[in-house]
Length: 120
Image 1 (cartoon, rainbow, N blue to C red):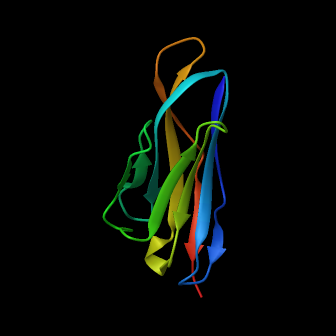
Image 2 (image 1 turned 120 degrees about the vertical axis):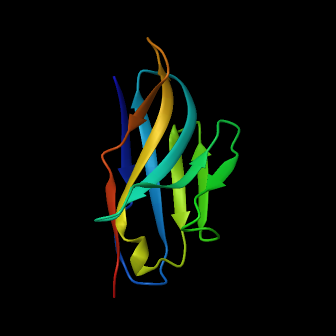
């Protein structure tokens, strides 16, 4: 059984930073692409950032220049460092990982989401 779990969300003030983590566990053969989406109340879900197996990063438009995505394959974990947060960054941030389980084909696994609130 494979699980993906986010951590690191919380309440921060405008201008502060936050680092989210996304850890995969279970019977994993390989992890391919990983990434983050976010959804704010009343808004569509949007891509925040993604990182390929080779470590190539792509960022969504909304947080350009304020993000660093990385992964530690030895720990099956991905990180999202967010800088200079703004109130409009308030959302539920969800991570995904494209995983080949020990038995079976590649699937996209999602975490449960972590709330990020930016407010003074």
